Amino acid sequence: MVGLAVLGGYYFEQNTRITDVDFSGHRFTSSEELQATIAEISPVGMLADSVDFGMLMNSIHSLPYVENVNVTMGFRGKLQFNVTERKPLALLIDGSKRNYVAEGGIRLPIIPEKTEDVPLVYGFAAEPLSDTLKTEAFQQVEDFLTAARENRFGWITISEVAWNEREGVVALTAENGVKLLFGHSDFETGLKHWQAFYGEVISTKGIGAFRQIDLRFRNQVVTKEL
Image (cartoon, rainbow, N blue to C red):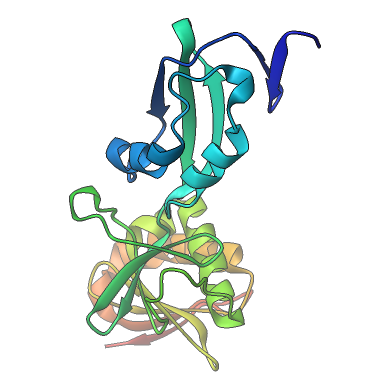
């Protein structure tokens, strides 16, 4: 197409001169961080067909919270980068070390003024940020947390999560710290059992009556009471 520069399905007039750069969609990543990552390759003042958009987006992608980025041309040459960020799935507790972790085992730094209310996860290294958690054990924990977030009831009633070879995923309730056993798979079913048990039994007897609730079995819930 003559006279147009093409990027990701968008067509920019080649003689469009970029006058400014703006960012949207970001929460954990500051505008200052985003601006700094492209400062040395700023497209401001350049014609659209002279800009290396791939290099710009790769630079933005290098920031830990940035999962995806696309670009559009706004009014009067303003270049708009639309950022999609990773969302913390849990807070890794590793002794005195703390970091968030997102889906895919990607560790994320804590930003003190932008904290997230997510479950605590024990038993996995919180550092280095440059490495991802890829073990089978963490994959099971991630699958459980993802299922719990979708279940919502599980998300609001569970505060801590760990894993061991014999019991699989182990969670503690936000109220009273009761131990919940979820096993190694089929977490959606286990969470449904937990919600049903809470509504049918705990709502009557109280959470304080239980020490452990085993949700690993398809047709029964096994409990240890105080």
